[in-house]
Image (cartoon, rainbow, N blue to C red; front, side, top):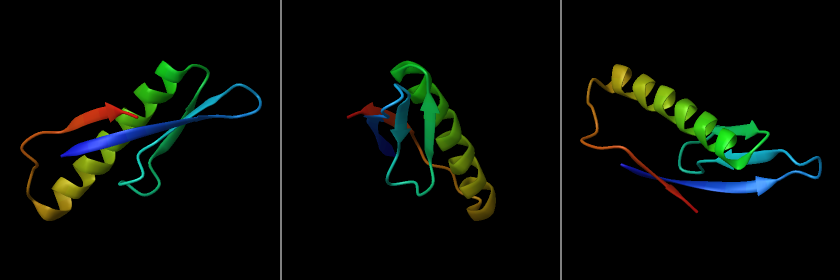
Length: 66
């Protein structure tokens, strides 16, 4: 599974990181790296929940920065 992280910057300087293929998975950070770390952690939680429900696991999870 490959997930693309997209970034945007708010007027107040905060960064937003989002993984559009996982609805609702977005995170804010003071820096781009902080936003990226937070969105990756959230994505892994969502994937873990999906694994628990479906009882199947993906072979590989990778994140790519857009």
